[in-house]
Length: 345
Image (cartoon, rainbow, N blue to C red):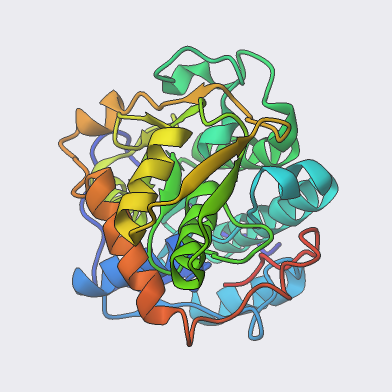
Protein backbone atom coordinates (compact mmCIF):
# COMPACT_ATOMS: atom_id res chain seq x y z
CA UNK A 1 0.00 0.00 0.00
CA UNK A 2 1.41 3.36 -0.96
CA UNK A 3 1.84 5.92 1.79
CA UNK A 4 -0.47 8.91 2.14
CA UNK A 5 -0.18 11.65 4.74
CA UNK A 6 -3.41 12.30 6.63
CA UNK A 7 -4.04 15.15 8.98
CA UNK A 8 -6.24 14.55 12.04
CA UNK A 9 -9.91 15.26 11.42
CA UNK A 10 -12.19 16.89 13.97
CA UNK A 11 -14.82 14.80 15.76
CA UNK A 12 -18.45 15.67 16.27
CA UNK A 13 -20.81 16.98 13.60
CA UNK A 14 -19.08 17.15 10.20
CA UNK A 15 -19.84 19.47 7.32
CA UNK A 16 -22.13 17.98 4.64
CA UNK A 17 -20.13 16.11 2.03
CA UNK A 18 -19.39 17.86 -1.25
CA UNK A 19 -21.88 16.90 -3.98
CA UNK A 20 -19.28 17.70 -6.67
CA UNK A 21 -16.51 15.47 -5.27
CA UNK A 22 -15.64 12.05 -6.70
CA UNK A 23 -17.77 9.56 -4.76
CA UNK A 24 -17.27 5.80 -5.11
CA UNK A 25 -20.09 3.36 -4.37
CA UNK A 26 -18.68 -0.14 -3.94
CA UNK A 27 -21.47 -2.59 -4.75
CA UNK A 28 -23.52 -0.12 -6.78
CA UNK A 29 -25.49 -2.85 -8.56
CA UNK A 30 -26.59 -4.66 -5.44
CA UNK A 31 -29.64 -4.08 -3.28
CA UNK A 32 -28.09 -1.47 -1.00
CA UNK A 33 -25.52 -0.02 -3.39
CA UNK A 34 -28.05 0.64 -6.14
CA UNK A 35 -30.34 2.40 -3.66
CA UNK A 36 -27.44 4.54 -2.43
CA UNK A 37 -26.58 5.40 -6.05
CA UNK A 38 -30.18 6.47 -6.73
CA UNK A 39 -30.26 8.55 -3.55
CA UNK A 40 -26.98 10.27 -4.37
CA UNK A 41 -28.17 11.05 -7.90
CA UNK A 42 -31.32 12.65 -6.47
CA UNK A 43 -29.14 14.67 -4.08
CA UNK A 44 -27.18 16.12 -7.00
CA UNK A 45 -23.91 14.18 -6.78
CA UNK A 46 -22.23 14.86 -10.12
CA UNK A 47 -19.17 12.55 -10.03
CA UNK A 48 -20.40 9.12 -8.97
CA UNK A 49 -18.10 6.18 -9.66
CA UNK A 50 -18.87 2.46 -9.64
CA UNK A 51 -17.75 -0.71 -11.37
CA UNK A 52 -19.51 -3.96 -12.27
CA UNK A 53 -18.03 -7.27 -11.18
CA UNK A 54 -16.90 -7.84 -14.78
CA UNK A 55 -14.98 -4.56 -14.62
CA UNK A 56 -13.57 -5.00 -11.11
CA UNK A 57 -13.36 -8.02 -8.80
CA UNK A 58 -13.25 -6.51 -5.32
CA UNK A 59 -11.47 -9.60 -3.98
CA UNK A 60 -8.50 -8.78 -6.26
CA UNK A 61 -6.30 -6.56 -4.10
CA UNK A 62 -4.06 -5.23 -6.86
CA UNK A 63 -7.00 -4.45 -9.13
CA UNK A 64 -8.85 -2.57 -6.40
CA UNK A 65 -5.80 -0.45 -5.58
CA UNK A 66 -5.26 0.33 -9.26
CA UNK A 67 -8.88 1.40 -9.61
CA UNK A 68 -8.68 3.71 -6.59
CA UNK A 69 -5.41 5.20 -7.79
CA UNK A 70 -7.13 6.00 -11.09
CA UNK A 71 -10.24 7.66 -9.66
CA UNK A 72 -9.03 8.83 -6.20
CA UNK A 73 -12.46 9.17 -4.56
CA UNK A 74 -12.92 11.70 -1.81
CA UNK A 75 -15.84 9.71 -0.41
CA UNK A 76 -16.60 5.98 -0.38
CA UNK A 77 -19.80 4.08 0.41
CA UNK A 78 -18.72 0.47 1.03
CA UNK A 79 -21.89 -1.50 0.30
CA UNK A 80 -20.37 -4.51 -1.50
CA UNK A 81 -20.66 -7.86 0.27
CA UNK A 82 -21.36 -11.53 -0.16
CA UNK A 83 -24.79 -12.09 1.38
CA UNK A 84 -27.26 -14.94 1.70
CA UNK A 85 -30.01 -16.46 3.78
CA UNK A 86 -29.79 -18.76 6.81
CA UNK A 87 -29.08 -21.91 4.79
CA UNK A 88 -26.31 -20.36 2.69
CA UNK A 89 -24.61 -18.80 5.72
CA UNK A 90 -24.79 -22.07 7.64
CA UNK A 91 -23.53 -24.24 4.77
CA UNK A 92 -20.69 -22.03 3.47
CA UNK A 93 -19.17 -20.14 6.43
CA UNK A 94 -15.66 -20.16 4.93
CA UNK A 95 -16.83 -18.34 1.83
CA UNK A 96 -18.85 -15.75 3.74
CA UNK A 97 -15.87 -15.06 6.00
CA UNK A 98 -13.14 -15.06 3.36
CA UNK A 99 -14.89 -13.13 0.61
CA UNK A 100 -16.21 -10.39 2.86
CA UNK A 101 -12.90 -9.94 4.66
CA UNK A 102 -11.11 -9.56 1.33
CA UNK A 103 -13.64 -7.11 -0.09
CA UNK A 104 -13.56 -4.94 3.02
CA UNK A 105 -9.81 -4.99 3.49
CA UNK A 106 -9.07 -4.31 -0.16
CA UNK A 107 -11.45 -1.37 -0.42
CA UNK A 108 -10.47 0.17 2.92
CA UNK A 109 -6.74 -0.18 2.28
CA UNK A 110 -7.07 1.29 -1.21
CA UNK A 111 -9.20 4.15 0.10
CA UNK A 112 -6.65 4.89 2.81
CA UNK A 113 -3.74 4.70 0.35
CA UNK A 114 -5.36 7.13 -2.09
CA UNK A 115 -6.54 9.78 0.35
CA UNK A 116 -10.24 9.04 0.79
CA UNK A 117 -11.51 11.57 3.32
CA UNK A 118 -14.72 9.90 4.46
CA UNK A 119 -15.86 6.28 4.17
CA UNK A 120 -19.08 4.67 5.30
CA UNK A 121 -18.94 0.91 5.91
CA UNK A 122 -22.21 -1.02 5.71
CA UNK A 123 -22.48 -3.88 8.17
CA UNK A 124 -25.38 -6.01 9.38
CA UNK A 125 -27.45 -6.42 12.51
CA UNK A 126 -26.16 -10.01 12.76
CA UNK A 127 -23.01 -8.58 14.40
CA UNK A 128 -24.86 -8.57 17.73
CA UNK A 129 -25.06 -11.51 20.16
CA UNK A 130 -27.82 -14.04 19.61
CA UNK A 131 -29.30 -13.26 23.03
CA UNK A 132 -28.64 -9.53 23.05
CA UNK A 133 -31.07 -7.28 24.95
CA UNK A 134 -34.05 -6.16 22.88
CA UNK A 135 -34.05 -3.64 21.32
CA UNK A 136 -30.33 -4.03 20.66
CA UNK A 137 -28.16 -0.99 21.51
CA UNK A 138 -24.87 -0.28 19.76
CA UNK A 139 -22.90 -1.11 22.92
CA UNK A 140 -24.16 -4.72 22.86
CA UNK A 141 -21.43 -5.46 20.30
CA UNK A 142 -19.02 -8.22 21.45
CA UNK A 143 -20.91 -8.85 24.71
CA UNK A 144 -22.05 -12.43 23.97
CA UNK A 145 -22.10 -15.40 21.61
CA UNK A 146 -23.19 -14.90 18.01
CA UNK A 147 -26.00 -16.75 16.24
CA UNK A 148 -24.19 -19.93 15.05
CA UNK A 149 -25.89 -20.07 11.64
CA UNK A 150 -24.24 -16.81 10.50
CA UNK A 151 -21.31 -16.31 12.85
CA UNK A 152 -18.70 -16.30 10.07
CA UNK A 153 -20.49 -13.53 8.17
CA UNK A 154 -20.95 -11.62 11.44
CA UNK A 155 -17.25 -11.85 12.29
CA UNK A 156 -16.36 -10.41 8.88
CA UNK A 157 -18.70 -7.48 9.46
CA UNK A 158 -17.35 -6.93 12.97
CA UNK A 159 -13.88 -6.77 11.43
CA UNK A 160 -15.16 -4.01 9.12
CA UNK A 161 -16.39 -1.99 12.10
CA UNK A 162 -13.04 -2.40 13.85
CA UNK A 163 -11.37 -1.38 10.58
CA UNK A 164 -13.14 1.99 10.50
CA UNK A 165 -12.41 2.54 14.19
CA UNK A 166 -8.73 1.70 13.63
CA UNK A 167 -8.49 4.26 10.83
CA UNK A 168 -10.05 6.87 13.10
CA UNK A 169 -7.52 6.13 15.87
CA UNK A 170 -4.43 5.87 13.68
CA UNK A 171 -5.12 8.54 11.05
CA UNK A 172 -7.82 10.75 12.59
CA UNK A 173 -10.11 10.32 9.57
CA UNK A 174 -13.89 10.57 10.05
CA UNK A 175 -14.67 7.05 8.78
CA UNK A 176 -17.94 5.60 10.10
CA UNK A 177 -20.05 2.44 9.94
CA UNK A 178 -23.77 1.78 9.83
CA UNK A 179 -25.58 -1.40 10.84
CA UNK A 180 -28.86 -1.90 8.98
CA UNK A 181 -31.62 -4.20 10.07
CA UNK A 182 -33.15 -6.62 7.52
CA UNK A 183 -33.42 -4.81 4.20
CA UNK A 184 -35.77 -5.29 1.26
CA UNK A 185 -36.91 -3.46 -1.84
CA UNK A 186 -36.07 -2.91 -5.54
CA UNK A 187 -33.07 -4.87 -6.88
CA UNK A 188 -33.28 -7.46 -4.11
CA UNK A 189 -32.18 -11.05 -4.73
CA UNK A 190 -35.30 -13.07 -5.56
CA UNK A 191 -33.34 -16.22 -6.49
CA UNK A 192 -34.62 -19.63 -5.42
CA UNK A 193 -31.42 -20.29 -3.48
CA UNK A 194 -29.55 -17.75 -1.38
CA UNK A 195 -32.26 -15.11 -0.97
CA UNK A 196 -33.42 -13.67 2.35
CA UNK A 197 -36.78 -14.31 3.96
CA UNK A 198 -38.83 -11.43 2.54
CA UNK A 199 -37.84 -11.62 -1.16
CA UNK A 200 -38.10 -15.42 -0.95
CA UNK A 201 -41.63 -15.07 0.41
CA UNK A 202 -42.61 -12.53 -2.24
CA UNK A 203 -41.47 -14.83 -5.05
CA UNK A 204 -43.11 -17.89 -3.49
CA UNK A 205 -46.44 -16.18 -2.88
CA UNK A 206 -46.45 -14.49 -6.28
CA UNK A 207 -45.82 -17.84 -8.00
CA UNK A 208 -48.60 -19.43 -5.96
CA UNK A 209 -51.02 -16.74 -7.14
CA UNK A 210 -49.94 -17.14 -10.77
CA UNK A 211 -50.13 -20.94 -10.73
CA UNK A 212 -53.27 -21.20 -8.62
CA UNK A 213 -51.54 -23.11 -5.81
CA UNK A 214 -53.72 -23.59 -2.74
CA UNK A 215 -50.97 -24.22 -0.18
CA UNK A 216 -47.61 -22.64 0.68
CA UNK A 217 -44.96 -23.99 3.06
CA UNK A 218 -42.75 -21.54 4.92
CA UNK A 219 -39.61 -22.31 6.91
CA UNK A 220 -39.63 -22.47 10.71
CA UNK A 221 -42.38 -21.82 13.21
CA UNK A 222 -43.26 -18.28 12.17
CA UNK A 223 -42.69 -17.03 15.73
CA UNK A 224 -39.30 -15.24 15.50
CA UNK A 225 -39.57 -11.47 15.45
CA UNK A 226 -37.75 -9.43 12.85
CA UNK A 227 -37.43 -5.78 11.88
CA UNK A 228 -37.52 -4.76 8.20
CA UNK A 229 -36.37 -1.55 6.53
CA UNK A 230 -37.02 -0.48 2.95
CA UNK A 231 -33.72 -0.11 1.14
CA UNK A 232 -34.55 3.41 -0.04
CA UNK A 233 -34.84 4.43 3.61
CA UNK A 234 -31.48 2.78 4.26
CA UNK A 235 -29.88 4.74 1.43
CA UNK A 236 -31.33 7.96 2.79
CA UNK A 237 -29.92 7.15 6.23
CA UNK A 238 -26.47 6.50 4.73
CA UNK A 239 -26.33 9.93 3.14
CA UNK A 240 -27.71 11.48 6.33
CA UNK A 241 -24.94 9.87 8.38
CA UNK A 242 -22.21 10.98 6.00
CA UNK A 243 -23.57 14.52 6.26
CA UNK A 244 -24.22 14.58 10.02
CA UNK A 245 -22.28 11.93 11.95
CA UNK A 246 -18.65 11.62 13.00
CA UNK A 247 -18.14 9.13 15.81
CA UNK A 248 -16.41 5.81 16.51
CA UNK A 249 -19.53 3.78 17.30
CA UNK A 250 -21.39 1.94 14.58
CA UNK A 251 -24.89 3.38 14.12
CA UNK A 252 -27.97 1.14 14.04
CA UNK A 253 -30.34 1.84 11.15
CA UNK A 254 -33.89 0.55 11.33
CA UNK A 255 -37.50 1.39 12.04
CA UNK A 256 -37.55 0.54 15.75
CA UNK A 257 -40.53 -1.80 15.15
CA UNK A 258 -40.64 -5.55 14.50
CA UNK A 259 -43.15 -8.26 13.62
CA UNK A 260 -43.31 -12.05 13.68
CA UNK A 261 -42.41 -13.96 10.54
CA UNK A 262 -46.01 -15.18 10.47
CA UNK A 263 -47.25 -11.57 10.49
CA UNK A 264 -44.77 -10.82 7.70
CA UNK A 265 -46.20 -13.69 5.69
CA UNK A 266 -49.67 -12.24 6.17
CA UNK A 267 -48.56 -8.88 4.74
CA UNK A 268 -46.97 -10.63 1.74
CA UNK A 269 -50.16 -12.62 1.18
CA UNK A 270 -52.15 -9.39 1.30
CA UNK A 271 -49.84 -7.62 -1.16
CA UNK A 272 -49.77 -10.52 -3.63
CA UNK A 273 -53.42 -11.49 -3.29
CA UNK A 274 -52.73 -15.02 -2.03
CA UNK A 275 -55.67 -16.54 -0.12
CA UNK A 276 -54.66 -20.20 0.23
CA UNK A 277 -53.37 -22.30 3.12
CA UNK A 278 -50.05 -21.53 4.85
CA UNK A 279 -48.06 -24.40 6.41
CA UNK A 280 -45.04 -23.90 8.71
CA UNK A 281 -42.17 -26.41 8.51
CA UNK A 282 -40.90 -26.36 12.08
CA UNK A 283 -38.06 -28.77 11.23
CA UNK A 284 -36.32 -25.85 9.49
CA UNK A 285 -34.27 -23.43 11.65
CA UNK A 286 -35.78 -20.24 13.04
CA UNK A 287 -32.50 -18.46 13.81
CA UNK A 288 -32.34 -15.77 16.47
CA UNK A 289 -35.64 -15.50 18.45
CA UNK A 290 -35.82 -11.72 18.11
CA UNK A 291 -33.71 -9.06 16.44
CA UNK A 292 -34.87 -5.48 16.94
CA UNK A 293 -32.42 -2.60 16.82
CA UNK A 294 -32.31 0.30 19.22
CA UNK A 295 -32.26 3.20 16.75
CA UNK A 296 -32.33 6.02 19.29
CA UNK A 297 -28.82 7.19 18.35
CA UNK A 298 -29.89 7.78 14.74
CA UNK A 299 -33.35 9.14 15.47
CA UNK A 300 -31.77 11.45 18.04
CA UNK A 301 -29.91 13.07 15.15
CA UNK A 302 -33.23 13.80 13.47
CA UNK A 303 -33.57 10.98 10.91
CA UNK A 304 -36.78 8.96 10.43
CA UNK A 305 -37.75 6.25 7.90
CA UNK A 306 -40.38 7.08 5.30
CA UNK A 307 -41.84 3.65 4.47
CA UNK A 308 -44.19 1.67 6.68
CA UNK A 309 -43.87 -2.13 6.32
CA UNK A 310 -47.23 -2.67 4.59
CA UNK A 311 -46.53 0.13 2.12
CA UNK A 312 -42.95 -1.04 1.57
CA UNK A 313 -43.95 -4.65 0.87
CA UNK A 314 -46.65 -3.53 -1.56
CA UNK A 315 -44.06 -1.34 -3.31
CA UNK A 316 -41.61 -4.25 -3.53
CA UNK A 317 -44.22 -6.70 -4.84
CA UNK A 318 -45.18 -4.20 -7.54
CA UNK A 319 -41.51 -3.73 -8.48
CA UNK A 320 -40.91 -7.49 -8.60
CA UNK A 321 -43.93 -8.09 -10.80
CA UNK A 322 -42.93 -5.26 -13.15
CA UNK A 323 -39.42 -6.71 -13.52
CA UNK A 324 -40.19 -10.42 -13.35
CA UNK A 325 -39.87 -11.05 -17.08
CA UNK A 326 -36.65 -9.16 -17.64
CA UNK A 327 -35.18 -9.46 -14.13
CA UNK A 328 -31.74 -11.06 -14.29
CA UNK A 329 -32.30 -14.69 -13.37
CA UNK A 330 -30.00 -15.48 -10.48
CA UNK A 331 -31.14 -19.06 -9.93
CA UNK A 332 -28.20 -20.65 -11.77
CA UNK A 333 -25.80 -18.13 -10.27
CA UNK A 334 -26.86 -19.00 -6.74
CA UNK A 335 -27.33 -22.74 -7.22
CA UNK A 336 -23.94 -23.11 -5.60
CA UNK A 337 -24.60 -20.62 -2.80
CA UNK A 338 -21.02 -20.82 -1.64
CA UNK A 339 -19.49 -19.52 -4.86
CA UNK A 340 -17.63 -16.29 -4.06
CA UNK A 341 -19.76 -14.13 -6.32
CA UNK A 342 -20.73 -11.21 -4.14
CA UNK A 343 -17.74 -9.08 -4.91
CA UNK A 344 -20.07 -7.78 -7.60
CA UNK A 345 -20.00 -4.00 -7.62
